[in-house]
Each structure stands twice: as structure tokens, then as C-alpha cells.
Image 1: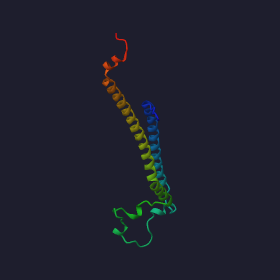
Image 2: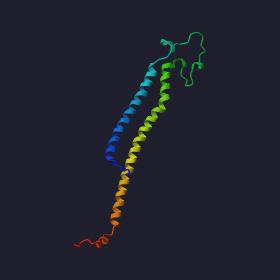
Image 3: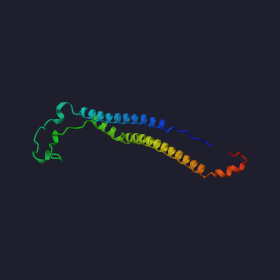
Image 4: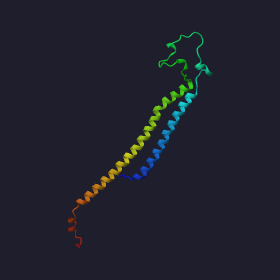
Length: 150
């Protein structure tokens, strides 16, 4: 029969280490996403120089046609270039992977903690059952086995 020898204090120490590493992973992922946003913003557009925000040449119909859905002028909006779009697409595609990493870390830590707590509760229950059994033993029955009486 297999036996278990779990030391709850040792498990607790390891869970603290894993928790610290999981926080480090979370910080690294947050930094990665912030850096991707910054890189996408700094990447510019495919239009060279200041032509992306240049005023149109020739006759232009004034008024609402130059306004976007928010009421802001369409021509003053910043354009997203191919590098920024690619970085945004990369981040969006990896979002589920990042979430899965965080979920797995959390599930592992919580699972180990729960299993250890169940082990401790099982030990306590086994000890309680042994004490009940010891209390139920009839000591007067042992007197008749030929032992010396004092």
C-alpha cells in the first residue's frame, strides 16, 4: 500500500516561491504589452514624413464631410501603420495564451494548496478516529488475560 509523507510547511514554502515567480510572470507580461503599445505608437505610418497629416490639395467640400463619427476632423486623426497594426494583431492573437499561462499558474497553486489542506484534514480525522477507538477499548477486559495485578 502506498503511503504519503507530505510536509505542509514545505508545501507552503514552495507555494510562496511559485507565487513570487507567477507575479514576476504577470509583471513581465504587463511590461510586454506596454512595450508593444509604445512600439506600435512609435512605429509611424507607411506615409513618409508629415504627409499623413497634410491638408488636402484642391477643392474640398467643407463641413460635416471632413468630420469623423466622433465629430473630430478626419485629417487630424493619427494613422496606424503596418508595424503598429501587426503589433496590435500579435497582441490580440497572444491574449488567450497569456491568459492561459496565468490561469494555469493560479490553478496549480490553488490545487496544491487544496490538496495539502485535504491531506492535513485527513491526518486530523485519522488521529481523531484513533483517539475514539482508544477510548472505546474496555480496559477491564485486559484484567482477565493473566497479567499480575498491582
